[in-house]
Image 1 (cartoon, rainbow, N blue to C red):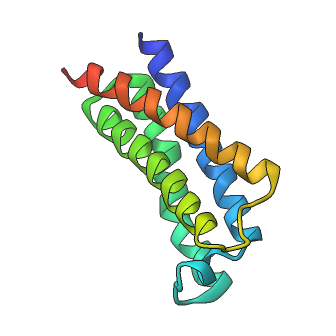
Image 2: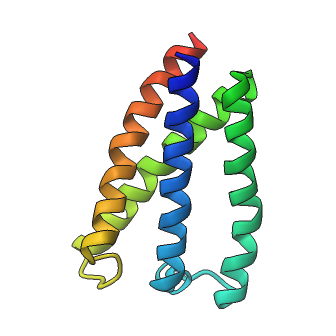
Length: 123
């Protein structure tokens, strides 16, 4: 179970980081009306990506903090899928490419699975 826990975490973190790269392409700061433009968007991702990567270390160790970060990462993935599908259904042109949708779909699938195994690991 420990190897599966780590690899699911790492795969989902990778997909979410790739999604964030895609988000920069689609200028997501405009979609969410975030201040700071491109520079602000990049700066807020420094602690986010750091936490994703540090979480992989803690997931590998199966620490309580790693399990908590795994739950947070899974929730973030489910949220990312949901909010972007909401915007697509509202008619926004962002994230409609086949690759963007594929990444979001994979994030949802992996996040749901990660959520299940993360909850099981805490119990």
